[in-house]
Length: 413
Image (cartoon, rainbow, N blue to C red; front, side):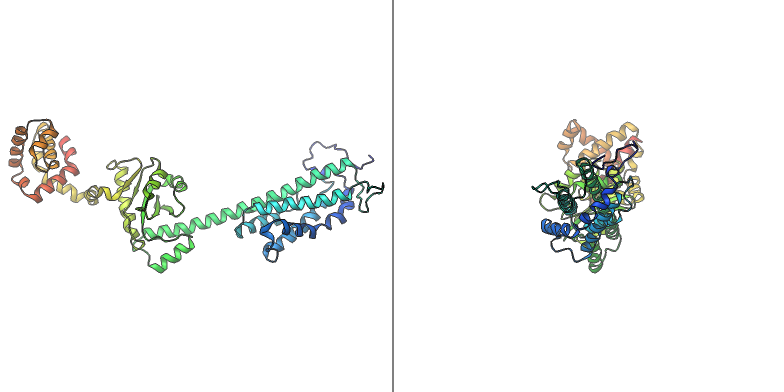
């Protein structure tokens, strides 16, 4: 064929450079290899991020990348070989991430490089200069070959860019994993007793890229809910899984709008927020939140959305030592055990209404939907059964606590 195009006879060919005549490599070599400096100069001129960065590691890798890319492209022409080595471009992507840049600048560099190279090839392939003479650098390629060459060049650059994207993603995953490990070390240490001293906390926080707040609270959620909740929370949190429980340290939880932000992030997911404490008291907020979370899981506290542990101190107190609470219930509610089931149920209702009404018989009667005289009659019988305990302030408190801790179950039993 007069234009030197090799016909495609192998349907299994996958690479567009296989359709470029092999002779093009030798003809294009002086043109292609002569564009390296121009490509670098154009990239520096058009990509602001690289204007001052060509003297360090990235500059060395860019120069190496351009040189290898040009030479490798020429070697591929007329073959159906895959790219022999993309490590240079993979490493370029990694360096970009380490330098804190996005992939936009490097992607622009690839586009500029392909544009500069193609402009030089197209100029050399111009069949006339106005006087009917071929340009001095004419590579001797016809229109079809030039078309195939363009297709090959842009497919080639696309693969190099893809390798850099992979390198960037790889470095990003390493950095994320490392930061996650450092944050876990911070959170795990904040959960342990005693709390870290200021120098240790500062070092851990610095490693985890976290600014220690003046106050914070521990938010405890199910392990499987942690990632979703954290994505919705403000970025100033520190979070990890500790002992199979999700723990999130929320800075300044009492600040304006902070609780609303936490509740919105939960969106109905059960969670408990411990008391607000200084950084040197973190074990206390964690312990309180985990204890309340256990009650939430057992059905003793609301099981939807945000629960503040300090709103349920009595429940926490009564469940802090279950044997002590059981003894209190057994001792102070023993008179109820001697009653029939019906009488016991009526006694629990009456005592609860009277105690909740602070001894106001009329209010208790209203709550029970009975006549005040009925309440007086029942209370007289109860005072007799409890042998004066109900007339003693401490005794009444103990009965009220016992009823709250185990009265209903006792009444049912």
